[in-house]
Amino acid sequence: MLSILAVTAVLAVVANIEPTEAVAGVSTFNDFGTQSTVACAGFPPTNSQGSGIFAAAMSDLSPLWQGAQCQGSLDASKCNGRGSCVNCVGPACPDEELCGTCFNVRCTGSLDGETSGTCTGKTIKVKIVDACPATHPANFCKIPQFGGTIRPIEACEQPGVNALDIATTARSALSTFVGIFSYI
Image (tube, rainbow, N blue to C red; front, side, top):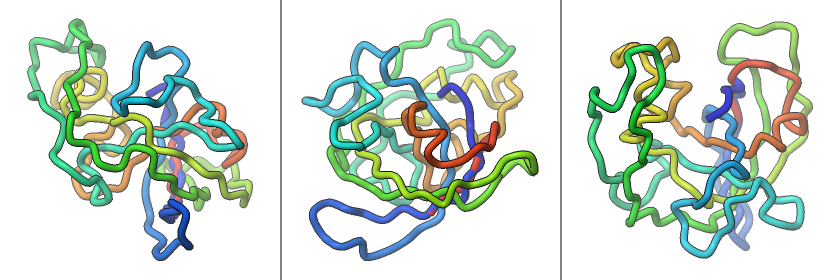
């Protein structure tokens, strides 16, 4: 996760049917091009998933998540005590059942009180190609419990929150906020 854009966004499932629900969530951003793999087999680790669709990872603590949570544990020995991991190997996520599912995302506001940015009003489509596991050291080492300074909601660590880690290339299409944002 590069940064968090507080965007109250609504997610609508778009898999070849009309969206049936809109839900609020939190968006963070990730450069999928820096990864060698993603959790979903058959999908490339790229920001673009073709035809104007952006890559996204869903938190395994999100209410929308389907399947078992990713394997692993919150092991403090993998953290340096200052917000970074020293052993950054992520857990396996063999039961992620939303691979390839698309969601519409639209910024609805800043989550960290930022007033200098704004939502664009545009809706983008994201495709789930990866997971944002709560048991990944790159996530949990950032939160105060492990010596970091990032709020759990900004690190895929907040139970009950719909959290998407969206391709960095989608950020400007959604908002001009610098921080985290909410979406629908």
